[in-house]
Image 1 (cartoon, rainbow, N blue to C red):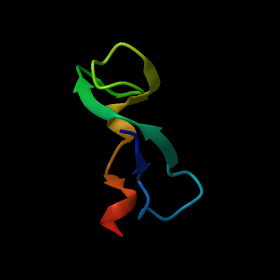
Image 2 (cartoon, rainbow, N blue to C red):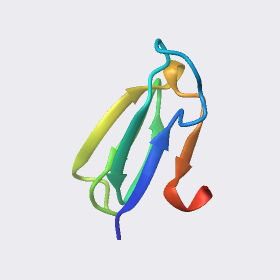
Image 3 (tube, one colour):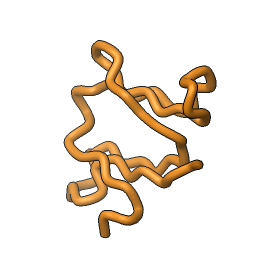
Image 4 (cartoon, one colour):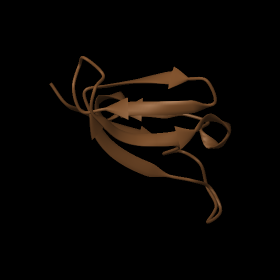
Length: 62
């Protein structure tokens, strides 16, 4: 099952990194957050440097 994750949704400012991604799951791997299309973690959808991530919300967190 895919969920919609919003990275840094609540941050203000043009320089803030923001993204919305559909993924089955995500996890932190070293210096990165990796979002996966499948629960087994074999198909990467997005990789983001952890230092730019402040919040990760799901669409249902609103």
